[in-house]
Length: 79
Image 1 (tube, rainbow, N blue to C red):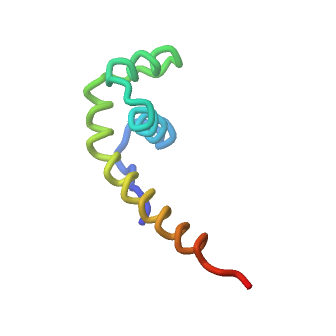
Image 2: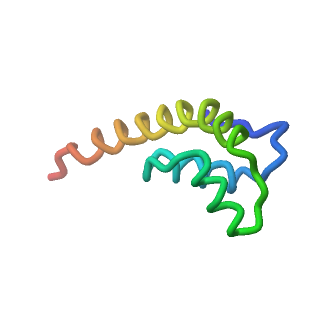
């Protein structure tokens, strides 16, 4: 299952980076807005909130499935 970014006004790399940054470092939406402004990308904190509400569960689910597959492969016995 791939995550659909259809209809987004920003590239998927920007969206994924900010969602990851929010989840990994627990920064506020306004801090993310400031970080993006330093990189000359103008995004409102409300937009960041919508991205995180929409994409964070999808990213977490995908990461959980990949982790589960890795655990199965890592625990396999190789003779």
